[in-house]
Image 1 (cartoon, protein in one colour):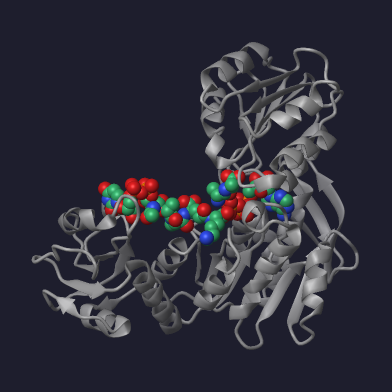
Image 2 (cartoon, helix red, strand yellow):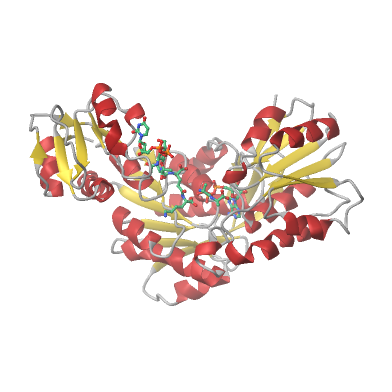
Length: 455
Ligand SMILES: CC(=O)N[C@H]1[C@@H](OP(=O)(O)OP(=O)(O)OC[C@H]2O[C@@H](n3ccc(=O)[nH]c3=O)[C@H](O)[C@@H]2O)O[C@H](CO)[C@@H](O)[C@@H]1O[C@H](C)C(=O)N[C@@H](C)C(=O)N[C@H](CCC(=O)N[C@@H](CCCCN)C(=O)O)C(=O)O
Ligand SMILES: Nc1ncnc2c1ncn2[C@@H]1O[C@H](COP(=O)(O)OP(=O)(O)OP(=O)(O)O)[C@@H](O)[C@H]1O
Ligand SMILES: C[C@@H](N)C(=O)N[C@H](C)C(=O)O
């Protein structure tokens, strides 16, 4: 970005203190990340960012925002006084996005956003100067941060937008104003705040509220809740993808190995390969191929991009274990749909030894939590997954459901803060022929167990 202090104050319609002739080239809300030329945005949270304005200045910040209800306005750094620093951050992002005016692809859905975003960016890069959301910075802070980090010559912005409450996507979609909006699927993530999957689908459909005129919705047509809702918008330009042959784009001849998956589609003879496993990643790739087509990128280029697409850490990632066997790490987050998908895939992976599953609590499932945890039983078969290690309190109903089905001693449960015992027991159990998969919500921190198990 490139904005002068005066330009920013004009955009925000806000007064400047300690005026100077300075230009800002980047923004950050973390003083530890500040580089010379940055605008520092102190966010108001339990630990208030205003106390780090001095540190930001020492690291080279040229300007800071300052929220008007805070005392002790700095005297040695140009500041713009605003009523709400987060709202001002979003306003600057909105202005800068309109100025750069790239094509915008907004990606949402209960699962698969980050993977799909990575696929689309890899495809987009073949033909456009492309910027994508770093990691999964998909909320009201991460979205403006991503926008403001775009170089001025960006042609394509692939941006992830997340929701955990109704209304979130109306706000974020209107902020990013997509040319293409994409919904990967509807699951149960954050159902605590929506109560039903139908309301999650309603929340996800809010993504069309900010669509540009003639914008397209790309959606998972295997999901009846989306088909029903999309059907209520007869004039909406739409493209469906999925595994069912009723979709505009669907996959056939799916060939899955532990490290990659290849398939063809109904629209060409091109064979596509992704460096990931799981049928759900085929649907993620199908959605990205649909976007590639809308961006007028050839199937040949799309195929080249997909085969090399970067895999995000801890999402269906195979690692070598220090015990000699393989680890399937899927510990970034968890919810029933995703956990069942991964268990189904894991249950059929070839192995000389036994398969072991480590499953952590799935958080933010609200009152449905006990039943949803217990429902994982449908994906656990003792003849395929021999030992089950459970972590947390919310997953206790699954332990109760599994005990009558599994031989004594093969189902164990641990407290989240008892990682040492879990690790000790796993290391005693694992042999070089075994395979282990781990999945749990972020708050269970199974990534620490993966770190100890891997080579
Ligand atoms: C309020 C805030 O500023 N907290 C950020 C802050 O946390 P901390 O808990 O460490 O805060 P801390 O108490 O230390 O500091 C408070 C404030 O002072 C600042 N600070 C602190 C110390 C210091 O030396 N200097 C300094 O400037 C710090 O940057 C923060 O602004 O410092 C981290 C590292 O810099 C950021 O990562 C956090 O960012 C939050 C989580 C965020 O929302 N980050 C954005 C960028 C984001 O998109 N995060 C995604 C998560 C998105 C998500 O949950 N999505 C949901 C959906 C959500 C929909 C929207 N409702 C989903 O996908 O399911 C992610 O982290 O992975
Ligand atoms: N299409 C899909 N359907 C069901 N589950 C999926 C799908 N895609 C990914 N998953 C599961 O979700 C996990 C997280 O994937 P990814 O990070 O791409 O999703 P996400 O929606 O971005 O989640 P977050 O925003 O929390 O990062 C994967 O490791 C996998 O277990
Ligand atoms: C970390 C956040 N993006 C998320 O996915 N949270 C859910 C509850 C999880 O960690 O499973």
